[in-house]
Amino acid sequence: MGGGIVGLSAALFLARQGIRPVLVERHPSTALLPQARAFNPRSMEIYRALGLEEEIRGRASILTDLPEMIGAEILTGEERFRLDVLAQVRPPATVSPTDWAMIDQDELEHIVRAHAERSGADVRFGTELVSFDADADADADADGDGDADGDGVTTMLRDVSSGAEYRLHADYLIAADGHRAGIRHRLGIGADGPGVLFPVVNFVFDADLSTALRGRRFLLAYLDRPAPGTALVPLRKFGRWALGVPYDPERGESFDDFTDQRCAELAREAVGIPGLDLTLVPPMPGWDRKVSSTRIGGWVARRYRAGRVFFVGDAAHVVPPTGSYGANTGIADAHNLAWKLAAVIKGQAGDTLLDTYEDERRPVARITLETAMRLLRDRHEGTGDDATAVDDLAMIFGYRCDSAAILTETSIPVGPVEDPRQPSGRPGLRAPHVWLDRAGTRLSTLDLFAGAFTVLVGPDGEDWTAAARMAAASLEVELDIHHVGVGLHDPDDRLLDAYGVTRAGASLIRPDGFVAWRAFHLPRRPEYDLHQVLAHLLGR
Image 1: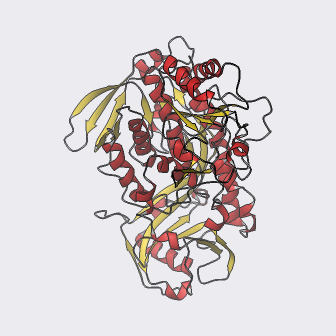
Image 2 (image 1 turned 90 degrees about the horizontal axis):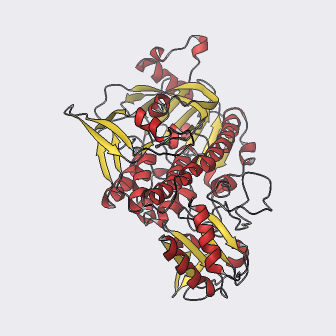
């Protein structure tokens, strides 16, 4: 339920796993506004493994050439800080094979939807979820053990254009219905966090700001007027701008106070030119309304699963927009959940595997919220000097998963993240990127992890190959095997150190690209060890 970038990504990931998802979204089409505009390298690694990277980069936004963020009282005033945002968070080539993608969310949604449909997803825009059978959901956990013992979820759907209603029965329901989290609230599941921090009035206007810009090009300006935290953003059309101005209901301010005339005056105050010639325009074609309101806040759901219902994206967590964590965290949610659902639906895994979704993703959301809150305070109130206090690369690539779907080692360092610049290859972390060579073609280790469990074998670990085939056959699971030194070469001699194994060792990578287990050396019975490990990870 939900056709934003997280819901569409979930549909794509499931379809690529051989599952036929049905996506329903009450709006008639994908987004018509940019919304999120920066997608981090981890999201791009995920899309890259599915073959989407080149197409995504081919539809980059104008922000690709506008990397700076500035802070000032007004646009014509003296800057209190200026940052090259991408320079701070761009990964070196030894950390990732890809980089940030500056693409507007509506453009990315078009791409992901098309690939989801080509892969077998049934995407139904203009379709509203009227109700779902909560009793069936309760029955799914009637014994109170947290397992989904029922036979699915029954939904009532409505075609928005005709009003016709019909039932649809599904194995599971993924709630990707945004920050209002209607499905989660219907199930009585609350959230913890600072809550709503402040409301923001938003509008779009056309104006020639050449005088105020003084040759500057930026992707975002934080201004202190008309109110601290005001944000000015360039849009796709040259000379078109979006302005967001916080307001305070406790001081008697109301959204109804923001008429078109008042918003025009707010824009002039933010720019610093009282007589500026400007025109408010609707944010989307066909809209009469020119002014809208959003709420900036932060919270994390207390549960990510209720029987056969799962929460992803903003339905599970909301973070301030600073750091571009919101949509990216939701994409990672969907990626984590999709392979687990597919394994259970195919009968390859027990239901307990689905509990690991919350175990792994909820702690990530909590630390992400803390990080975004720190950035928000710095950019609204500080000088910008502390923006590097949070290691974005560690947050993007180095967060740790801890659940029954990981065979953790005893010597785990303290802390929820690890520096990806010095990878350890420990279970629970994203598998390190190492450049490899295959018949003269350069590829990343991450390109090998395309949706199945993968065994990455050291040069002297040939016995792992037969062992992996035997374990995969006995458990009837798909298992890719890559033997470094046999058709696959490590020209920089980095792989063993990065993955923390010897020449006879092996690393087991999950379908989502996280290390599940590793063997430093070749054991006496590698097929037995692999069988036991996979059975444990899959809840069998």
